[in-house]
Amino acid sequence: MTATPAKSHGRKSITTSLQPRDLMEETKLKDAWVAKIITLFPEAFPGVLGASLTGKALKDGLWALETIDLRIFGEGKHRNVDDTPYGGGAGMVLRADVVAKALDFASKRTPADRKTWPIVYLSPRGTPFTQAKAQEWSQTEGITLLCGRFEGVDQRVLDEYEIEEVSLGDFVLTGGEIAAQAMLDATVRLQDSVLGNADSTQEESHSNGLLEHPQYTRPAEFRGRTVPEVLTSGDHGKIATWRQQQSEALTQERRPDLWNKANDGD
Ligand code: SAH
Image (cartoon, rainbow, N blue to C red; front, side):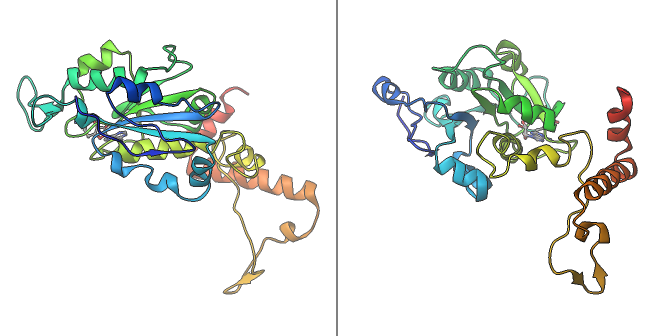
């Protein structure tokens, strides 16, 4: 097979290639959390992950991104990756054998244990992604994300590789790439040293089962609207109580599902 350099980001470059020599040169970044993305659109990465804190962390080698171009594992001269669904119906389905080759490639030098290195298919049929999932993934050594396209992926490869299906929400996207970026953003920012202030991840929405309290900054008056007095009182105890009350009220009002869950254990 021909070797196609894939886009690679982070401290050292990692190439996606099937040449053994290049494989030898593939560098496993020491201590860096690694995301391997199997996609037909490697050019879509790092996308928004290249901006702001996640982008800086990527540049600094705190995490690394390796895109694996599904196309190079395709069949024949045209490198076909998809075919019509058995049983008929609209659209095309990504072939199990083609996806399997990409997964095998991605699995080189990654732990086989799924707890240490999850393999995930982005899918509207999957378990909804949550902050708890982001927490869980941030504690792994890395992750392999399979981005679907068209009507999705042949079921047999998902079964064969015991792939976890995770959904960004109850809507249908054109492909898994946006979902992958959203989930990576949520995961990477939880890693030690990626966010400047670790406290901010402990107090924000969803980390404690509640939505965050409202935030205010200068100017003190905006179009006749002032800032809640307690916030300028300097009384930290009072401020903490006020924020907690706001947080609880907001959660009850907007997300009774979360509120009930937070109070289940009581
Ligand atoms: N026919 C499929 C939808 C295919 S959408 C179905 O009805 O279930 C094409 C691809 O986009 C999927 O393979 C998946 O990788 C991605 N995708 C679409 N919606 C998604 C969502 N809500 N979360 C995660 N990935 C999604």
